[in-house]
Image 1 (cartoon, helix red, strand yellow):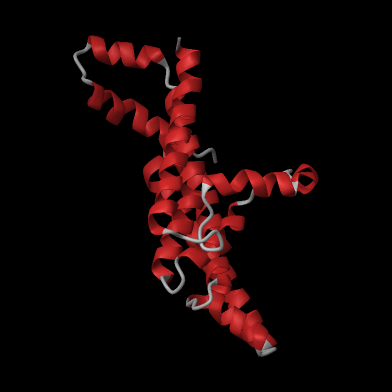
Image 2 (cartoon, rainbow, N blue to C red):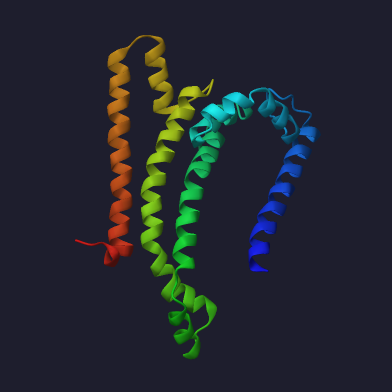
Length: 210
């Protein structure tokens, strides 16, 4: 029964998501060059099926950047928030789920026998146990999200930020400006990474092996 639910619930959620997606496109009367609907996807897939078979080894999150940039033209902050969520959410969510799923049942039974409630078990056992997985995923997500936001700034027609400055330098063949932007981005990326490391040392330092 549990295995059936693990299959049916995600399938049902996917169907509902596709129906809402189709309804949103239909309600706003969006043309397919602005926002494709689920019913537009199969014809596109079938038309280029041979290329999908050849090139379909991986689906990087960066491929959705141009789509988001076109949908929310001029809405720089919205674009940035969406791409950060898309890139960061799933690695963090999967890592935390793995940490919670590997929680030893014995700890929960002991705390329940001592009168602890579900919140106390989560706060005292589950949350500390998932912190190493959380910070590990956060290190990866921070770097990827930083790359994604800068890619968004380069692609977006009315972009802002260092990515847009890099694109301006490329258009005007100002190579010193381009390299200055690249170095600045590298320094900022390293800085963000070590902020996460610093927070990890504070909240999950007990799990770090010296």
